[in-house]
Length: 147
Image (cartoon, rainbow, N blue to C red):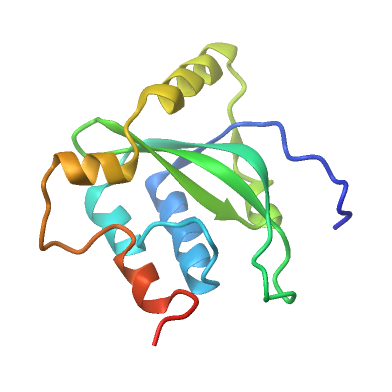
């Protein structure tokens, strides 16, 4: 992939099953931005629509065998209907075939929600979930430098 390739300029809408597959792939390759797939499975709306907004490229330093990933802002819809902001790194070949948001109105709504939704961490702290597995707990166990 050429280093000067522009970031994709299309917002994607994905169902929960597709989001879980993307989170599982990110977890499998220990990509920099991801949530614990088990946490997503537990908290994401089963029939929800989630959105990915590409914002740049990511490279996992020290792992040249991995291609660059599309760094996406993730608008995650919870079972409660609330939306949360997170980030997710996605391989380009997995990003390209996802369903594109074609409605200007939907794109504007997603943009507004990304700017106003709490982050997963803010939600976690507000919900006072001390003692429960954190959305990023698995990363701490399997991420770079884990013993």
